[in-house]
Structures are given as C-alpha cells and as structure tokens.
Amino acid sequence: MAMPRVVFTPHLNRFLDTPEVTSGAVTLRAALEDAFAANPRLRGYVLDDQGHLRKHVVVFVDGRRSKDREALADALRPDSKVYVLQALSGG
Image: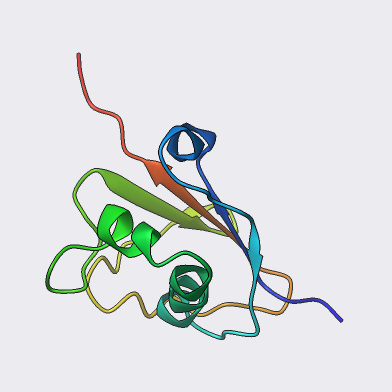
C-alpha cells in the first residue's frame, strides 16, 4: 500500500538524524507532525514558534512548491513525495 513519504535535505543530516518518514497523512502538516514524532528536534529546524514554516525552509509536494507556509494544508495523495529543503538565497 502506497503512503506519502517525507524526505529531508541531506544538508540537515550534518546536524540531525533525518530518516525518510512514511505517513498515512492526508495533509502536509500531518505528515510533518509524523516526521517530528520520529525526531522532535526537527520541529525547531522546520517550524517557527507560531507553527509556520521558517523563512529558510522550503517544501515541495509532488514537485510543486508549497505556498501555504502557515496552515501547511497542502493535500497529499497516497503516493505523494514531500521534500523539505533549506531555502537558498544570494546573488
């Protein structure tokens, strides 16, 4: 049975254990909560004090950038792939 997968940037592995997480979640927030249950320290890297995505984090769901940085209500399909990355800036 297919389940959404949450994958974190390899860069984060330098600081935290970031195993790939499978989840029965139907929203991005619920899938992230499953990942945080597996490693609670991830929460502080990904979310701010209000539970919104931090400015330096970007999330892609099935190849599309999540635009809902507050509610994280993006719908997930059973075969969805969620990638949590460090946003890059510069010139």
